[in-house]
Length: 605
Image (cartoon, rainbow, N blue to C red; front, side, top):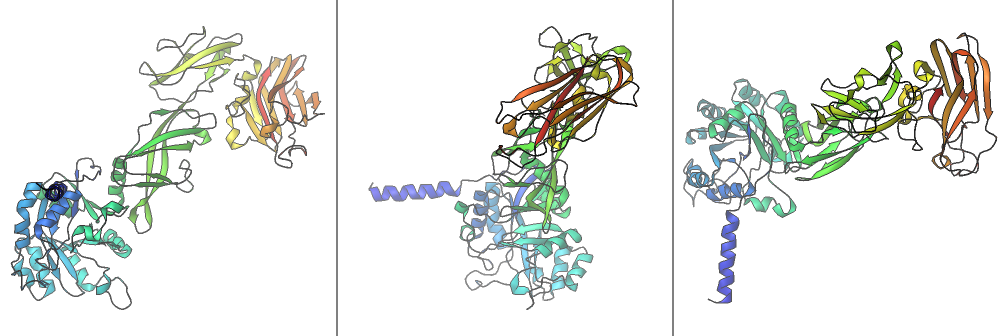
């Protein structure tokens, strides 16, 4: 055999193999339904198309479709001199190939009249020739009496619009709709989307269709190598049968996949989106700055374009594009009130390419489980027993701890029971659910001191991003590190720090300690002045201690600086006032910018 003949044979074999290669389109099924991909409007040589009926079936198979209808024009047959008029013949020719390839083929026809009423498809038709009745309304009635499902084709087609170009719903369509004959409508035809029709479909509760109306070979109209595809009508069917498809159309269980957009009713789009997006992130532990990272996987062949929701409590920081079959790692900032303890949060988002109405995006939510137990402090309990400051947790999650340096297990002491503590100690703890460790292991040194007995009030609130647990952060027995974002510091931008601690009854206090952070490179400075006032009766205050910052050292290293003063006698209240520098000094790189003041634990002994 010559080389030329070998090449020709190989090419023929390649063509045959390609003809039988099916590209499966990944789309999710809805609970209780299977998703079928359909095109319910196409033509062959038996009207004004350019291909043989079998070709339509093979194209559908290769492209990954499940259900189609060949809807040749009843009246318009330009090739009748060469192809004798035989109503329904295209269906008869295509059916064996459809059965062979597993494609559901609906017997259909297009009633083709001037506007109004325009062009309408009759699906699941029994006899096609009676639809040639010269009265278009009578032809539609005949189809309806056969039990056909009737949809209005391309209402926005420019060739059938008046000179003003307005897409209109005519009186004839009202008659068809009120008689229950008109049940569906094309929002998308070929490459055109009709926003006005989208709204009609919603208002009149019509079944959504997006169809190709293809006449030429499908690849002449769309270029798969460029990612183009015909519009698909996605049908949520009880099973893969024609009867179930008919039932789904009657009950309006369809959405449209057009270009990169999905169009449909909100309830169906929400369920469909949930099936496209895989979210299996488990328990998430916020970082010190309140951020978490989640992984979102797109299990479909449809790009997902996620956008933040304005004014939402918890949403995305910006647009996120998840390409088909891929995943994206997304950083989120947890609102302060959810950064500690256990919370089930809804991440609010809108899906930019999912439209529930013209110019209206689908709003959805991603459910996330947040667990953060990093800042467990102590507080005064009943009968002078020490309680742990434990955040709210579900009943099936418990915090277990040890004081001997060993890691806790499911049988270790429960933090809910508190601790008989008489001196500073170190605890080791973790969260357990059904006997299984679900968190990291944390080690904390607890400072047992009289401040945990007090009630504390702040004159100014700290900045939102350095809020910790609010005022309670200063008397929880936990001291911060040199990392100002560790959650143990309260940060004040430009504002002064004013705190007042109150005992229920006078307590003997010998020393008062307040810890400040200095980190000039992070714009954090020691106060200008610090004043400590005390009250023995809870009403009258006297000045106990004053400190003035005489020297600002340029680019001094990060350091924790405790201010400690002595006291003699019993006190009811302690007031601490620290004056913020206000602005960064002239020598600083941020000269004139707002200065920060950071305060951590207040310790009374």
